[in-house]
Image 1 (cartoon, rainbow, N blue to C red):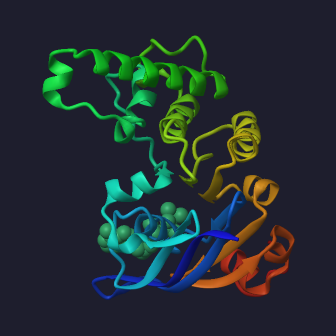
Image 2 (image 1 turned 180 degrees about the horizontal axis):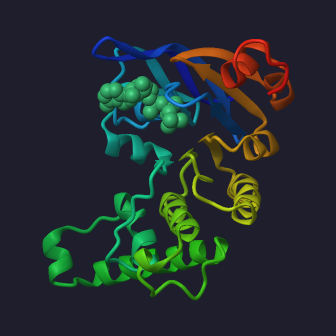
Image 3 (image 1 turned 90 degrees about the horizontal axis):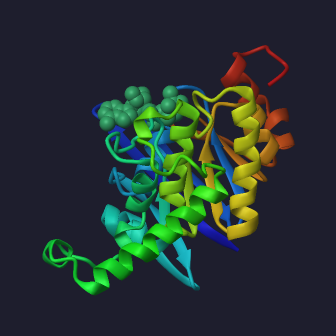
Length: 261
Ligand SMILES: Nc1ncnc2c1ncn2[C@@H]1O[C@H](COP(=O)(O)OP(=O)(O)OP(=O)(O)O)[C@@H](O)[C@H]1O
């Protein structure tokens, strides 16, 4: 059973067809990879799924409790409300805020406060804040960031900042987590830890993970299925070994005539 179905998705920027009739389906509770050379259209597909771009054509079907919802018709906050969270290619943290506060922000969509209630510190706001703080601390523990909660996010090394961003996406306990190049800028040890963490997120929380990543070791090591795109078009879809053997994928990465991927 699928949680996400991308159907005939297309979007152009001026004369450039960045995504050209791409279709793929992500099975529930799987780790699914989207790969392709630079400029292939991967982030653009993510932006269409998460509502940042409106495609020219196609559907993005999110399957929730046996109901199919076309995300293309929804606004970004409505998509988040359906249970979809994402991280970005470049770390997007609130630099002046602490690690804890940055992660708490991810639960904002599920809180009921308003500016007046918060200003007067009404009892339900205090209770709500305590609940969110406890939830954020659980995530901090899960990510192995215990002890850093009260330090500024901006003071952390890049790999840690990426984990904080991941924590912000995780706190809302999404059904589908979309990760855009989670290993970018990480060293080999950090990338290995990240691979374990992504598996743990799926296994312990039952969250489906859709990821774009250039680190082929990570992709081939943790994804059950992969969709490969090039120049905006889907060129292959299958298991990691099927993708590694695929001639079109080999050509896309290495140029014609090369045998290995
Ligand atoms: N907002 C935009 N306006 C104009 N062109 C865009 C826009 N967003 C993406 N593009 C173009 O669409 C194409 C696909 O870009 P995209 O960022 O999706 O590729 P990508 O596969 O994610 O690449 P990378 O791996 O380098 O991040 C590129 O040619 C890019 O320049």
